[in-house]
Image (cartoon, rainbow, N blue to C red; front, side, top):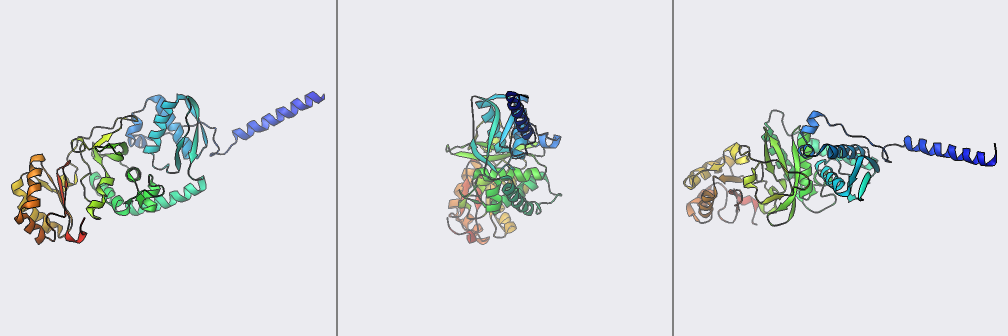
Length: 367
């Protein structure tokens, strides 16, 4: 063999070695292309995914599989524009809260046939954190009974997340890690945790991104209860103005009572929420149809609550405005509240968007 022949042979051997190394590369190093195969139940639990085109679904499933196996580089099933990729990538990272270990940073190019994924933690550390998350999740889920209705289960999730978490911009506050392990989260962390736990109960829930009526960026949930969709916002029900109690002003509300939440429809169009029968007030009978019923109902509800937080909803705006004035100015109503361990005036919170009054016991302190 000539010297040139030996060099060519050596180069060929080196090339074969490199190709073999790439083929046998372990998950986490990237370069492979596979798709997550959702079961029928998993797909049914993902309304936003159902809104994608077949091409977009292929991208979603491929990103899912790659991130699940901690790949740094993922070969995509098609070539996508930067806008196509970004839309699906952001949808996935918002709707799959188990991927808490993915960084907010992502890379784009005009034409994308592969994706570079940035991670907050290595695989070993992420799996250790996942164990902490699931330990805390189990503590919450263990308090929920299989005998409860869907509405009761989600109501328990709403309350237990709010009780365990405090609204705060701390480490990982936009994830289930921040909410469940650190006990501190922003709205995105609350919403993702609700989805994470609801899916463990076999229920359909999604994160909705958008703005409040005050033009502030916000994230909340929509969940399916007995075949109908409802809005749920744990963050707004965990407000400091409630002095540590957890009301239900934003649990299982229809769109007509959620006009102060404006969804961004770039990623997907949320389902219409038209159900009204699963609100806390409908479920437990805390409804006021006429202002004249206020004194009698307050007395009865007050005895029932026995010094705990009392909240009720008015039938419409007209009833609400009259009730608001009676709660704030009527001495007879104040006397009824005091008789039941509550205080008139200063400790009454009014949610005009949903026609709800929340009356705090004296033990909850001043605002």
